[in-house]
Amino acid sequence: MRRPTAEEIRNAAGKTVPDVIAPGLKVLFCGINPGLYTAAVGHHFARPGNRFWPALQLAGLTPRRFTPEEERDLLPLGIGITNIAPRATAGAAELTAEELAAGGRALAEKVLRYRPRILAILGVTAYRTAFNRPKAVLGPQPERIGNTEIWVLPNPSGLNAHCQLPELAEWFRRVLDASEGSS
Image (cartoon, rainbow, N blue to C red; front, side):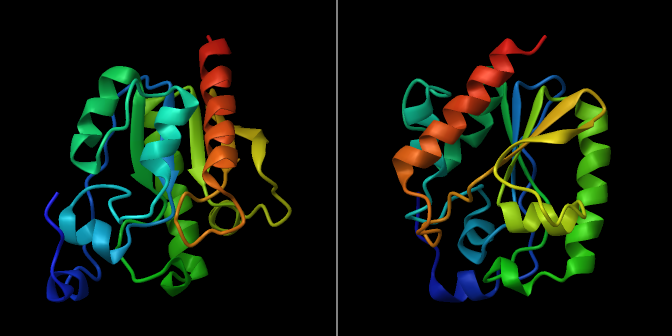
């Protein structure tokens, strides 16, 4: 993948990245919002150092390490990608609580429309705000959206030093196991 220039990254503020989604997925992964690098190249989790793609492979969700450009190849594997908030920012802290709450409502509508088995939200703080669940912790949530289970997982960003790749892959593996156990 071609690296974007500094100017392209700066100019990506406010841009969006199209969802990778289809009806009936096993797992719909949901990021907080696109970063500027991701928006500049137009593919999810594209910033070097993001651990999303290696975690998918280590967890057994993909047969090899996919690249961001291959994101649409996840669909035949029953995996999709979306975001809570659509607009790209330099950091999730730039999003307002209102923006996250609106994103949570739009995400719930999307989940009801596409009906994935599991919605895996990547970031507990964003989930707490978007869904008004201030005490939520990582793992499966007691709530559902329609028949879709909700899981909250660590954010795969390289900036999330609290969770290293093996732990992230273990969370992804738990979601895979749960998705295969669902009917």
